[in-house]
Image 1: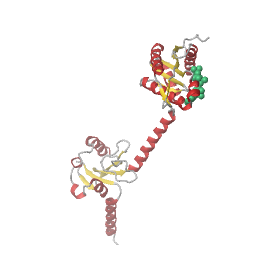
Image 2: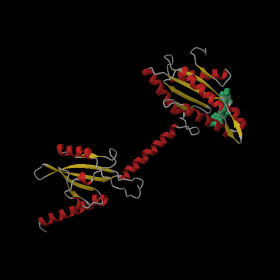
Image 3: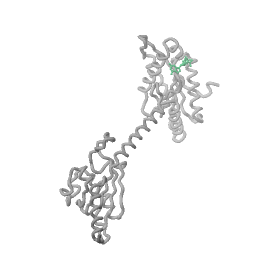
Image 4: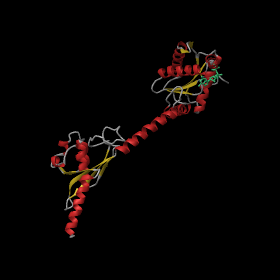
Length: 323
Ligand SMILES: Nc1nc2c(ncn2[C@@H]2O[C@H](COP(=O)(O)OP(=O)(O)OP(=O)(O)O)[C@@H](O)[C@H]2O)c(=O)[nH]1
């Protein structure tokens, strides 16, 4: 076989491969007119190479992000460097349907795109190649993993019975609020809430009834909070709340409204009505509060005073009052 024949063979094979490869290949001239459109592009767009050759890419595909894509291509021409567009940056450039059976949940094919400068024989960049990779499987796996991780993170921060923050995550919120106070002197108040004589509820109506009471209080609490407040289940029948940008007096208004709402509510268990009351301790951050345990213990002491004061009431912690 002569050298010419061998070269012709190679070229023929290459053209065959370009047509059948599972990657989209497009060549454009400097005016964005299509010079090459391979089998992958034909299969996914439904447009044949013969019918599209010489036509302007953006006229043929008006849905393309024209100005954004042109900007990318112009910099490829100018800098003579390839550019990569990831599906994470833009899920797709060509809106092709996703036909993959495993990843049937995605409507459109996710794509990674490479824009490649093509030089003529004189070395001048006259054309650009768009290489389209179908990365739907990878993208869907990654997105599913991300969703699963987010759900796991949410679960790890949530109390199962009440769907409030669990103690660990609530403490994290409290620490963040404490740091905000240390840095910006943003006021914040901590509230501890404890159900009164809860042991008697369990003893009289049973543990499942006690659980319902806890859930009912969590429900009322959630409805009473502002976006910036953070409530958690601190222990069995104890709840803790950080009220952001709130003074002790404003917190007292909040706890009294909450207390009255809880007192007025009732749950039905085994055809029996159950209602409970709660006691609340309040402690506002001030310069005398040196750390979060200090902050917490002040609220705990106020809660103890509320219990001592006859329960079903709120008390504000006053420094020195426990000495
Ligand atoms: N049903 C139910 N009970 C719980 C849960 N966690 C803790 N408890 C119960 O809550 C009760 C708390 O009782 P105590 O700490 O003695 O206090 P109390 O009866 O609420 O009385 P005061 O706080 O003094 O008003 C105990 O009987 C615990 O078993 C829970 O998740 N579900």
